[in-house]
Structures are given as structure tokens and as C-alpha cells.
Length: 127
Image 1 (cartoon, rainbow, N blue to C red):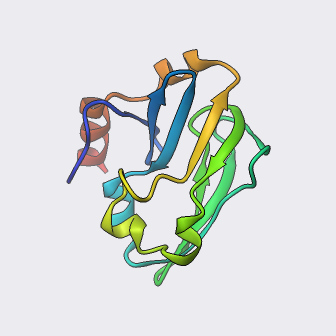
Image 2 (cartoon, rainbow, N blue to C red; image 1 turned 120 degrees about the horizontal axis):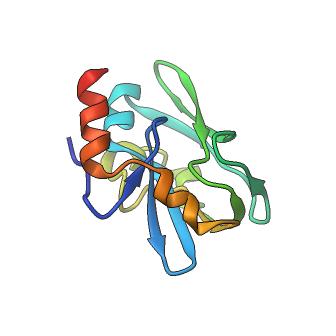
């Protein structure tokens, strides 16, 4: 299981990468492996306000549909349009090609409430 140390993680299996005053968000390697083959990704439009711990989109696999939960609150400033035509990127490259949205956080301090890589790995071990 790949859990990059520089990222922060939510208990709902999203990852966050801080890039200056913005954050890039996607789902973890663990999440994509649990879901199986991803066939569709639904993401919000640029300009959408998202709220921490509330759904912002969904991923559909051959097994199930799972909601994506916002790890932090803020405004969506970029969406990975490539996932419309290439949902399999989520399985192939969850941290590089399959980032989902970039958000301008309303409070960058919310990132500090997320799990470190070590804490996330511990959580998934227990599940």
C-alpha cells in the first residue's frame, strides 16, 4: 500500500497535498484498492463551495458507488477533467494522475486536523 509521507489523510480515505495557499485532493491507494475497478468519477464544478466532512462528488466502481467527502472546506478552483474520459487513472495512479480537485481553503489550518501518513496507516491496519 502506497501512503506518501508528505500528504495528509482523512478518515474517509481522501488525501490532501498543500500547494502554497491551495490544496490538491484525491482518494488514497487503499481506497481505490478496496473499491475495485473505477468506471466513473463525478466531481463538482469550478466555483463550488465544499464543506469539510460533507460529500463533494462520487466514484463508481464495478462493485459500488462511493461518496467523496471533503477533507477541508473551501472553494473548488480546479477540477481534473481527465478523469471524465479516464476514470481508470484512479486505480493506476491515485496520487499523480488521479488527483480530483484543487481547493482554495477557507481555513488552511483545517489541514492540521487531518491524519499523518503514519496515523492513516495505523487506522487502515485496524479496519
